[in-house]
Amino acid sequence: EVQLVESGGGLVQPGGSLRLSCAASGFTFSNYAMNWVRQAPGKGLEWVSTISGNTVSTYYADSVKGRFTISRDNSKNTVSLQMNSLRAEDTAVYYCAKKASGGAYNWFDPWGQGTPVTVSS
Amino acid sequence: EIVMTQSPATLSVSPGERATLSCRASQSVDSNLAWYQQKPGQAPRLLIYDASTRATDIPARFSGSGSGTEFTLTISSLQSEDFAVYYCQQYNKGPPWTFGQGTKVEIK
Image (cartoon, rainbow over all chains, first blue to last red; front, side, top):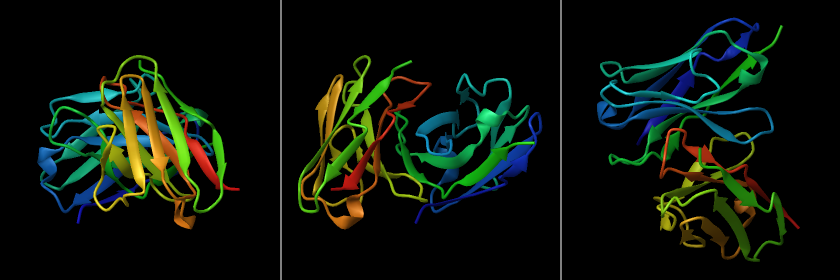
């Protein structure tokens, strides 16, 4: 069974930093791109970032580009999201999600349970 | 960026009735569309991909249709566990991979 378990969320002041992690199991981790998707309180889903299985390619939403960095450790089956210069509008539940297929297209399955991030003074 | 628009925002349906949810893309996404279900306090769950293929263990009462810019998710006979928020997502062109704003299916 594929499992994704996020950690690292919490309360941080504006301008601060936080590092989220996602531990994966149940599949050949290095074969799949991994994603972060967030959901602000009471709002919809927003794709944040993607990293390819071989770590060569990374992608970011414009809203986080230059502030967030995605990385992965295929020896430990983990993917991380380093979040710097955090803003109030980054407040959200952050989900780790596996790229569902091994092909070119990026839909998400499964999702982790999410880790909440609150940016507030 | 491809903008996804879902309608209606809220759908009130009685148990046992059919629910029809719509998703429109600002440009063609071919059949590269997924649907997700999200219940309160839970992570989204994949229901449909490639516009009409049910994901593993998804009941047959869920069906998807459409291609290009117009898509539909139909729940043939609503069960109590189906009351949730449903999102569509295009993966034809990205990044960014974009979601609709969601349709809440509530008990009438």
